[in-house]
Length: 635
Image (cartoon, rainbow, N blue to C red):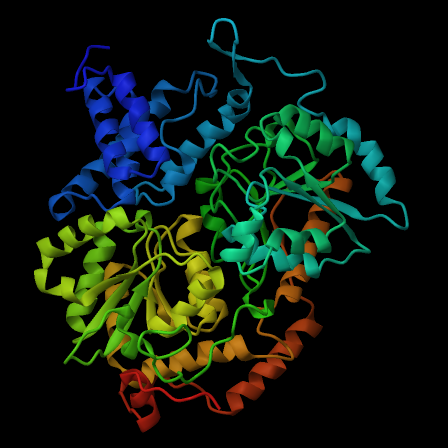
């Protein structure tokens, strides 16, 4: 291309240098170069145009009054529509993947929700072929390797073997979990406890780890000796270190097939680009293939048979519109979380310890700790929090947060500086709307240790304000187990936008779900100004975390695994009977339901929650003290 910038670079060279900045998480520099590449190429380098938008969203670079963000979202929508027409041939086959990545789409508020599915379909159709691209050592030109003989694997030929196996009296379903994040990543933080509860008489569990373990130094210093990977290893039948095959999906597919895996569960989806086993599922290493947990959305493919979800997160009326998979509906929330069974995570308490100066983890109330920023001569009435990455924020959400601050006098907003580079842009946006509110918005630094990070919710937050359309997932589970209620919007279609909504319903906190932006603002305002309402909701949430014999179904990992196992068995049974994949609804036995309902009845007899009384603001001394941030030593 023609030299365009002061460095006399072509658009392609600008793009490459922008990629280097992006890989180093220098988002402002990356955004500038991607935008230059996009414009200098007359917007023909679509990846540059998209990446510029993604980098800007990472650091809240939204332009004056959010106008740049609005233009960016329009750019994404128009580009997807254009590429849908230009990249799909008359047979419906994709010539190449769309320029927008599926993981980006989780945070882009599109007016047409189906655009996300188009993006995923294009990536699913081309993912495997891209995984076969190599560079010729002599010419240094890329080429696509041929598929090796026997690929994709014909699982119909394996069916007689599977049928014979299933009739054996000691038959066990061989289930494999594959992930790049089999180390100190969020997916393992949430899910490693599952493997403690699998029924080894019915299941043989295989792990396929496609990336290296964490360094011993990281485990000792950041994790204080806690190694989730080793915990998993000790609780499964086989732990396969397949890092050497991560860039050879054909060898990996054959390896899995040779092991006779019956059900494969992907814990990457479209996350961890460059680390995930790209193209693997298209080669059909197992007769049944599923998505679970990490990437919350459709695969857009015909080779992912099931998506593990629940009826609130993925309602059936949206299935044909947004998904290509059939659903395995779990009861009591589809999301795995091990907070209640990890000894490193402390359960919440109703009272707070006395504050320390300087701050010590586990001391003080949110009003006293003030987001770790001293506010002399001013009492803090209420502390709202959000500890998400900035890429989940958008102008509409932040405007509503500012309205909430104005509605709740002397309240604070406590955010995570993630990344630090975005703080200046976010403050600039706030300054354009109401400069006086910047003094009531504070930022805490990233905390490497996940247990300390989780505990900070209890110390620093009265309520978490969720993001839309990309909810907090791990961060929401952290907050809820700290006894911190989460206000969320429930009017989204994306799977990633409905996780908190479903959780609140299971927890009995449906009043925290708001259907629209104005209601979101109203709910958050009401809970910040009504002591009785806040303390009732907080107490009910803490009760769920402390409940034992039986454990509350939202937190009960063993109960979760029992239902998870049933879903796998039902999928396997359909396969053996020759029934194509169809939606599966896992229903708990009456005995299990009766056990919980008896416990729940006992709870209600102690004092049923009366929202009408709460709305009238009938505060008692204890409620008022909690809202004002009073502390007590634990007994």
